[in-house]
Picture 1: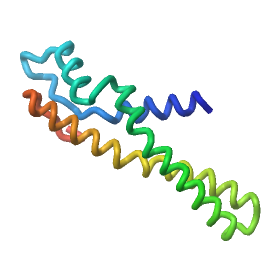
Picture 2: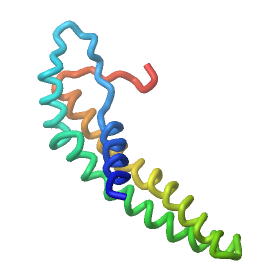
Picture 3: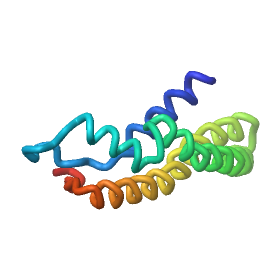
Length: 123
């Protein structure tokens, strides 16, 4: 279980950085790393750990609702178990989306203020 939480936290961390245009002539990877850590308020792992709370709350909320509705619609223990599993996974995804987006926006504004150009998603 601890490994699953660590993997989830690292996955959230991977999403917590906006795409920066690295093709500019004077781009420095070292300076960018330092600026990114400053804008995030720490390393990627620390930023993800702070945002992980929303995902956990969403997961618990989804599990509770999934168990309730699974028990009602499935009319069995199996329905409650399936509802709990599905609800927790969906709740984790939904609960992590808003904190990730908020963090991404804040980091993007900070990096733009430091002179970096952000790439559009999908570009």
